[in-house]
Image 1 (cartoon, rainbow, N blue to C red):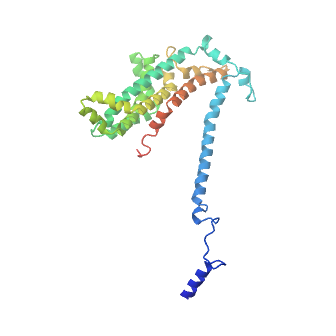
Image 2: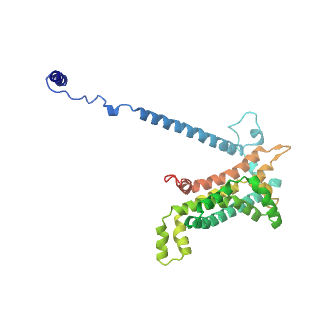
Image 3: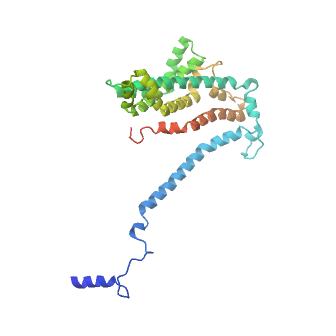
Length: 313
């Protein structure tokens, strides 16, 4: 039985000429056949592109429509049927800087309050984050969690205590009052983010600087801080965005001498109607600067926002 089976197998492997046949080069091998896993991967890629496309449209369409509406006349903005083809006009932007709706003071207040608070939060957050990352005291993790937990508190929980404190100190309706209000939420975030950046640096770099004769401050300023450039940029931009877009603190603590851009936008909504053209123009002033700032430093933002993604921290 075994001999006959072996003979039949060998005979089946020979062609008509009596020579052994070779595998046809056009016949696909098992390794090149369609793999179900490959089909699943292709479907997942297509699904990912579809989801990203929908998300992109969901984000960009309102922004593009706001930009277009800022160049429309009142007739085009309030038309029952949306108009994509219209004659552009700058009346909405001219109206923002003339008469009673002069936007210049609001713009200056926003730049001062948001810029100063972001600079202070980044500077203080770098110092506190460096100390938090290098300290070996007991309860360091609990302290870190407590710092970031203050950022999670709702604004309504801190508005009344801060209002009473600021009123006693004479900080209501002032730029310093807004800066301190923004710091209450920006500083914990800056400390937490910068401590993560400092913890990523090898301790040997700072130790080498100390061995070479640098003081602790010189090692921090000349060696450690330049290596965390991406962290500084990320912290500054995020704190700037938080303060620039704030409405709740500006509503409570600001006044005629310190109102910001979001407050100017709310004043266009009155009982007599809504000036949609100027409202869209103010929206452009609020959104576009932060978008440009994010695009300008996107390389550092990506590094900062993906910190710990590989190590699982």
